[in-house]
Image 1 (cartoon, rainbow, N blue to C red):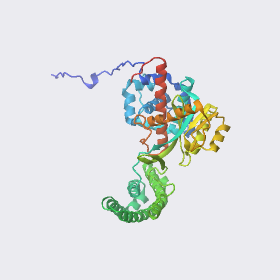
Image 2 (image 1 turned 45 degrees about the vertical axis):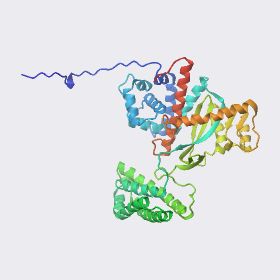
Image 3 (image 1 turned 90 degrees about the horizontal axis):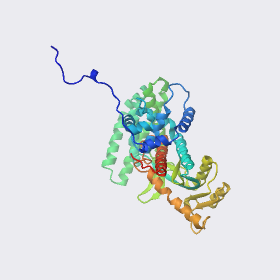
Image 4 (image 1 turned 60 degrees about the vertical axis):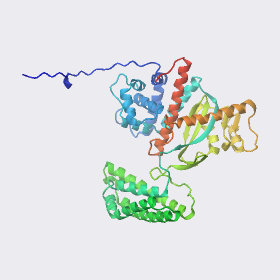
Length: 458
């Protein structure tokens, strides 16, 4: 006789849907209801069409991916955490328009969409949100203030021996999968890699004086120079077309490291010889585009990352511009660039513009006047008189002071503008725009809810 069991088997289980009511006052629900998703999809489709080589493959679910992008902007999280949140958290599914669907974008899909949009695409969406705030009479583009700031990268403090050690470690890892010639290079340079490890250990544990540190560093430079010569020969012999998918990635990584070290070694030798930092000094072996930004702050005179220009329109909304090079985002230049970008977005110059004294010069004043700015609030240097007086000057000073709290907010842990989990300057730019987008959409939905006497939850 067959024994009866008390439990249910897997076949007996019936798949069921759990109906969870979502409060209309939830912050994510209000975001989903108030944003114009069709307009955002149009912007996203335009960006996608400009970046893709062809339209092959399945059409993307832009509504869901844009919802995931906005969700990511409102709080800092990993991509796997975001996938889990969208899959199991009802307000997040509502924001993504997935309440009637079983599909959930995985972490790779979300990451790929963020990379596809990039800094330029997320900036366009952020501009749309700010225009929406202006249309709702929550912001006034006639009054603008500007400032520059630094976005710190998630890298260790630059150190010459650390650069050389990271190069040796990374080249060894890349060469193992970079094809036949790079593997041969590793076998032939095994002695140099072993000697490099000993020098790193000696530098960290036993080099206690400046003279000894310089001597060990010079010896390490000679070892790395020898590795560079061997690596150059191996890379010339390597044919990417004959490599597998991962082999091509590894060989490309080794090539980038070789090119970066080719620029870095003369800079290190210059520092050893003169005690001065070379112009355009590389601060990270993996992201050579980063640079040192002198801020003069107490406790943090120098920040390592990329520079940004910030604009704050009256009402508190922020617009951000990522510098493409170190020389681009100087205070004296951005004082005029900020107005140019404002004209490009709103098709007219602001009536009043404020900036700190770093942007003051008679040349900048004349340029701003020629662009149509009536009240120029560039804080003067020394005993130079203000271009504006009375209540307008006080108003611009007050507006200028309020841009600092906004920048501080996007640098908080909630939005994660500083030290984002990014391995390239392009992704750092995307993360920076996401932080500004999160700040703006959070402010927008809060102020719209306040106007409707709705108390937000969640």
